[in-house]
Image (cartoon, rainbow over all chains, first blue to last red):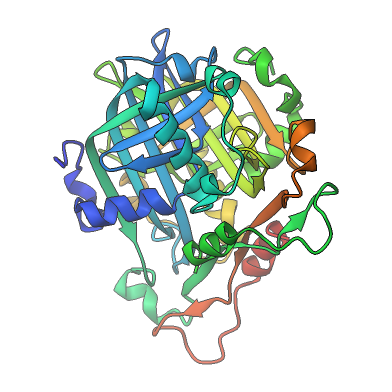
Length: 211
Length: 211
């Protein structure tokens, strides 16, 4: 992938290898999808999934996001992993892993739509699409899927301690990182779940993603 | 605030009251800022802070984001709070709290710049700006701050159990929610922190935000 949008200023944090980009996309909880609407920028949080070099988002058929077709879109995924407490406000930072993808929206139909919907279901709960009942024809009609081919993508990763001015290191101040942890809690069954029904296997697979 | 971008389809999840919108903005870890660059949408993850009805973002002086001025921008903040496992893929969902803000970028100088930088430092670590050494003139020159007056904002909140088709409730399947929890871990001091230096008080204030 071409790092078309790389900025030299922050190149020490930039990553352009496919493995890093895919890993961040695959572990992200939510994508922020930007598009241009009436000459104004619009951003919306969206569930998504990746199959190869294509991202998929979905929405009710008649919603604005599901009608995007042959227009440029930009999708950002960010995982904040720590608060970096430096000795100066200037060097305060956060640790994070993020990806920004540029691509063109394309409306999806047929078998690709089915595969995309399964992938979106499986994104947070791997294998979940095989545990639920099949989709009905009516449900398929009610759902619009948009593909975003990854044309350009770049990742940024910051880890580790603050980078303070050397003179500030003698101030006797606390400096370091407060980790930000995202984890899955104990599942809560609803009132329609028969007693003693075990958690679906996909939950254990999901927990593996958060370790 | 006028819900200019409300969509009737999802009105049951929409919130337009200032308290809800401010609470989600104030607890968010990162904002995704969208703008139009050469007719294409661009989204970037950014630290931010709110003072009244104005959001502030910052960047190195010469970066694209810090040069935004008198152009429309859109900022999204999303907190995923659960994975909603329904009995069908169609009714799968996530629990979340999100805000989308529309406004116009305005470059900031003088006393407003100082207040904005303090607010950004304090956003994740309340009171931190009073714990660090004062900013130098050189650091102020190196930092660009952009204000986004909140012109329109809308929040969406989903909580609770899946909403399944009635017929699916008799399938004997597990249905419910896997909570997604974001928390602060034990802080890690760097090698320049004198032994037995206590955590700054702002960390305790930050932990209060994540309870």
